[in-house]
Image 1 (tube, rainbow, N blue to C red):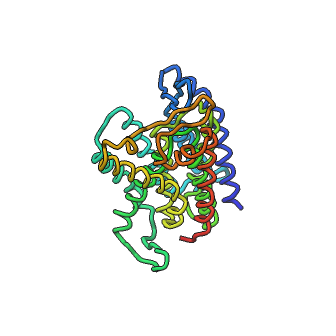
Image 2 (image 1 turned 135 degrees about the vertical axis):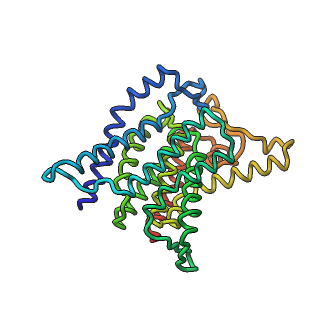
Image 3 (image 1 turned 90 degrees about the vertical axis):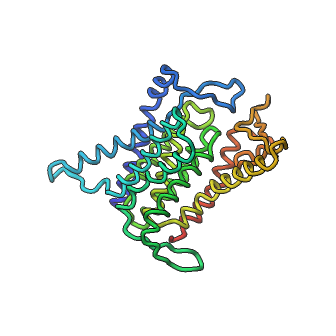
Length: 333
C-alpha cells in the first residue's frame, strides 16, 4: 500500500507541476524563437519545441525533493524514495535526451551517434542484479557479461530510436510513451521492483505534457523528449529483466521501424520508382483529412486507405498499442 501511495503521489505531483509550468515555458520558447513547423496544419503554423526539457526538468526536481526528504532529521525523513535503480534510469534517459538536443545543432554522423548512444547505457550495468534471460519455448539462459555489455545497451538504444521514429503527429510519441510507461509502472508495482519512483515521475510529467502536445499541439517535445522517454522505457525493461514483455509492448513501434527499413531498402534498389520516393511528411486536405505519400510507415497506413484526420490517426495508434501492452503486462519475463 505504501508503494501504491507513493506512486500516486509522484504521478500527481509531476503532472501538477508540468501543467502549471508548461504554459510559461511555451511563452518563453516562443519569445526565443525556438519553434518548429507543424507540417500537418494547413497554415503550417510555428509551434514551440524542446518540450522534452520540461519533462526531464520536472523529474529532476522531484528527485531533488526526494533527496532532501531522505536526509531530513529522523522524525521527518522518508527513506529510499529514489533508489540507485531510479537514478540510473534517469541518468541514462537524460544522456539520451541531451544527445538529442545536441543532435539538433551538430551533425556528428550516424556511426558516431550510434556509438555514443550505445555507451550511454553503461550506467545500468551497476544496478542490474541478474543476467538471466527467459526465451519463450526455449528456457532461461544466463548471458553473463554479454547481457551487461551488449544486450543492455543495444536494447536501450533500439527502444530509444523506436520511440523517436514513431512520431510526427500531434500527441503521437508522447501519448504512446504514456501508455507504455503506465503499463511498465503497473508491472513494476506488481513485481515489487525498484524503479517505481522514476516511472511514476515520468508518467505524470509526460501525461501533463501530452495535454499541451495533443491535437492541436501547443508544444513539441523534439528529439530530447522522444529519445529520453524511449531510453527510459528501454532502461526500465533491462533493469527489471522484462525483455520479452517489453518487446511485446513495443511491437507497434517495431513494426513501424521495419516498415521504414523496407521503404529505404526499396528506394535504394529502385531510386527512379516514385512509389519508393523518400517523403518526410504528408499534407492536410481542405476537408481537414490527411493526405499521406504512401502506407510505408505505421501512422500512414490508415490515412492512406481511409479518409481520417490527424487526431483520428493518433487515436488509432493508441488503440493499436494498448492491446500489446495488456498482453505484455501479464507476461512474467
